[in-house]
Amino acid sequence: MSRQHQHFRNYRQEQKLTQQRVFAAAIMVLLLAGVLMARLFYLQVIEHKLYQTKADDNRVMLVTEPPPRGLIYDRHGLVLADNRPIHSLTVTPERVSNFTELKKTLSNVIDISDAEWEDFKERRKEYRRPYQSITLKSQLTDEEWAKVAVDLYKLDGVQVEAQLTRYYPYGDAFAHAVGNVGRITSKDLERVDKLAYQGALFIGKTGIEEYYETTLFGQTGISKVEVNARGRIMSELERKNPTPGQDVNLYLDARLQQYAYDLLGDYTGSVIAIDPNNGGVLALVSKPGYNPNLFVRGISVEDYSALRNSKKLPLFNRALRGGYPPASTIKPFMALAGLEYGHASWQERYFARGYYQINPDGRRYRDWLRTGHGWINLERSIIESVDTYYYQLSNKMGITPIHDFLSRFGFGKDLLLDLNGQSRGLLPSNEWKMAKYNEPWYPGDSVNVGIGQGFMVATPMQIAAATSALAARGHYFDPRMAKTIGDQPAQFLDGLGGEREIVLKDQRNWEKMVNAMRKVITDSKGTARRLRGTDYSIAGKTGTGQVFSLQEDEEYDSEKLAKRLHDHALFIGFAPAEKPKIAVFAIFENGGSSSKPADLSRALFDAYLSGKYPKRYDYLKGPNHHD
Image 1 (cartoon, rainbow, N blue to C red):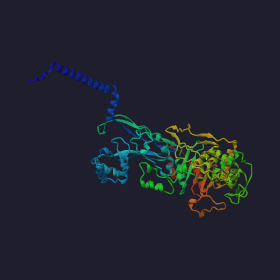
Image 2 (image 1 turned 45 degrees about the vertical axis):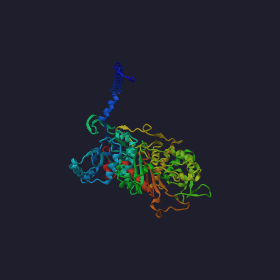
Image 3 (image 1 turned 90 degrees about the horizontal axis):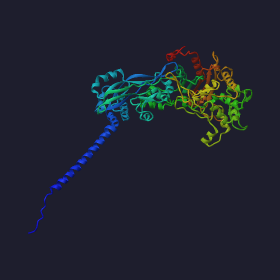
Image 4 (image 1 turned 90 degrees about the vertical axis):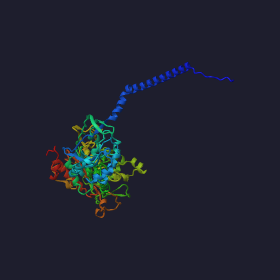
């Protein structure tokens, strides 16, 4: 009989094993409980503030309220850029269950164009906070408002909101000076504080509106609100009211601005008037202008295409970006350069034939008077605008002294302190030509620059600023638009703005040059003698800028040329000549005769110095005007 092994249970061993397992489990539970408690301690005590903030972020939201935009005034307190209340149809996308149905229902209530719906779709893609409404249709009429109000109960997510919108009461004449705001785009948000501009409708795009954007915008108001899980506002917890933007008060004279714009008539061109005593811009005209109100809430494709495709370029700011040959308006500055470097004197006489030659057998550079002027001196060269005098003077000087002297007056530089988008024009030099054309500077190049032609290009603002410095006998102010911000003087990059003295070796030459320019008006042969007869003195200089180059013996005949090839007509002047209060530059593009800008300038002098404008401009006086 085989022996069978029998197994007996070892209860003591099993009990011991069970105890070990229970103990291990207890240790594990204690460890896990310890980890849990440590984690709870970490979350509830150490990271309490962090997670409280995160919890609040789910419950509490910051809502911004854009401030009222600051106003823009002229020198007499006339509002040039205003805020006006309007009622707009807005939609909160989160509250709309079916946009197709909403579009169909709204279309039966009021007329909403396809362009407005497309614009709404684009705005939905832009950054915004939850439950922030989006404008669908701006500036509802009273009839539209009434129709929407009747059916508002069945239009989920639709509301009529009162909003402040920018308004420019005087339109085209002020567009290039004051500028305009436009709807904020995603590109705009890249250069500003997104939180500050949340809910804002527009931002400065051009002119004063753009340059002083941060000043005019103010400080955004912030509300701390409690929201539910869907982001809907339930209650307001805290509130900081917005701070309105500061007002900007300009040197601009609204009546002078509009008058100058109208005096240009049907011509394109520019007029700039400056106070020589401080550099304040009294008028900055570029014609044609445009209606800035079209841009405030987003210009339509049709309107923008019409402006962009116009041959007259109404969106182009000629005052700051227009490049023109300064023509004979440069002659007073060329004469001063000749005196400064010893190449001219007031006493020296010069026989002015009808042409000038660098070499005896070389090209003939014609004078505007084909028969010549005979024996003249420097003063007569200004009075009669003798081209040949400046041909020979510039040839003697060469381009380097010309460049260095004219740069003192701001030619070839950015000037205006508080408007963007200026052109530097072109003040040529030997180095410039070598870099541009890989050619040296030739004497013939200097001859052309001597009468403000050739390579030289200047903007209306540059010529006006140089004229203002001449009127002030060398006291130069960089032009500026803003007089005060709020009730404080406008501050620029250089303190109160660029101001310097242009010092001549003989300071008496300032007065002598002013006297020569006075005789341009008072002398029987003066090129602006048509301006005689005022009870105040005018100093001025005419100019005729060639649009295309004539051959050596070719005659200029305006009657045989298309109008676009007619000469530009220019004039610089200031009054009263003894103690000027206003300096003016005017250009009529393809105007032909310099009599046009001369007459315009006299009309501005008459009105500004006497305060007597045509009655139709009385609406532009402003509340602070005093006759």
